[in-house]
Amino acid sequence: MKVLLDTHIAVWSVLNDPRLSEKARNMILNEENEIFYSTASIWEITIK
Image (cartoon, rainbow, N blue to C red):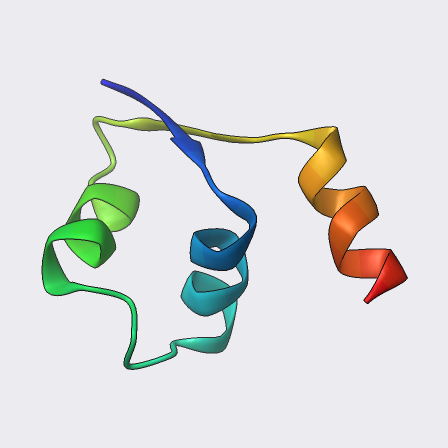
């Protein structure tokens, strides 16, 4: 499955934030999934 991460989800996954649901965590960690993030998310992270 192809998964596009929202900015918050990307940050929470990197920080291992407890707000990231178990379902989302499992989707991200599943090696069968392709994980994508937007360049806009990177831009958003850098300006905040």
